[in-house]
Image (cartoon, rainbow, N blue to C red; front, side, top):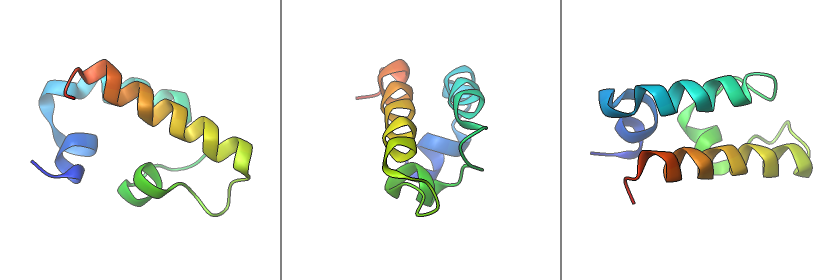
Length: 64
């Protein structure tokens, strides 16, 4: 399992992934780099919000 699989492909986390995409669709079009490193086109507050949603996804999967 790699980052791409965990964040974008794993069928075990479809509901959690959909929530992540729903929560962030107004901020940016998600891709793996943005999930891991943020988006240079967003300001700091928006990137912090993006990070909070990514953290919520990780917590909601109970993977770690």
